[in-house]
Length: 279
Image 1 (tube, helix red, strand yellow):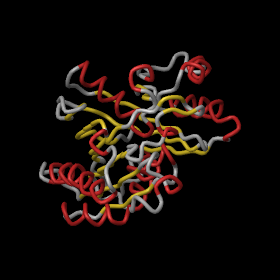
Image 2 (cartoon, helix red, strand yellow; image 1 turned 60 degrees about the horizontal axis):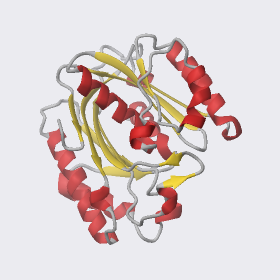
Image 3 (tube, helix red, strand yellow; image 1 turned 90 degrees about the vertical axis):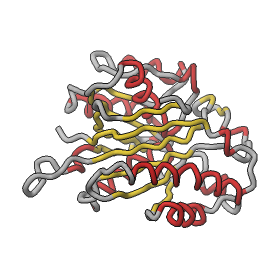
């Protein structure tokens, strides 16, 4: 089964972005993301690089007129020498849709850099706690993935087979999401599922639908909902606690509008994990 290799997961609190003017915000974020890109590109990985930035909290509705994604992408390109793009179209699941588009359209570019930027620089109460999903944690999560080399025409193991995306009915989103989990895990029996973090009232029914499925713990009580960073925090914590080794995961994110994604990834002895500054 096709899976992308996790080369690096770097997760940090986004408090260093709180309360900043927009220009300083862009500069601080450029320094953070630019450093990540530079380290990844110097790691002697073959196959070319692509960089994608996504966010749930820095959306058009809340940030228009204050935060300019174009300014950020231009500065990061100038700092790193690698072009990048920014999107928040699919909310928490945006990273999965970006990976899917990359694997379909740029299969020869094997190194995928995903920057999940969820911060609350304007101190909006909605992004700290709301009735839709409870409390929110804010993280900047940087992920370096590498797709396998294609052999022959590449069709049987095309990299795009690693990603599954879907759109659930928003009026029955958790029910539909549970069905998507069952369907996707049925074709990935050797994977451990990493799901989003939900408060107790939301995850109770979801857990009942996952009987017989191996999945990582829900860390809502510790972190709150981490938007697009949820599955990456779970995987990073699992790798950090279990030690270096080979393991396959299904990283999944789910958005309030029903968008969801499932990505097959794997770790090995060379996967680097850094959580809040601790490797």
